[in-house]
Length: 66
Image (spheres, rainbow, N blue to C red):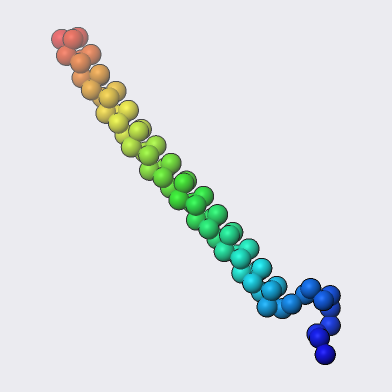
């Protein structure tokens, strides 16, 4: 005798669908987290480089003022 419920409601299929949705969600989250980390790391380097450039220009201005 088949289990109660709709005929298309196979417990193994429901578990597989749930697992696939969880995997897709996990992969999407990991990709988003990776992109955010990459963006953050890149912007820190850019800000540091900009600060060094400003410091270098400030040195030239001090030298010219003497």
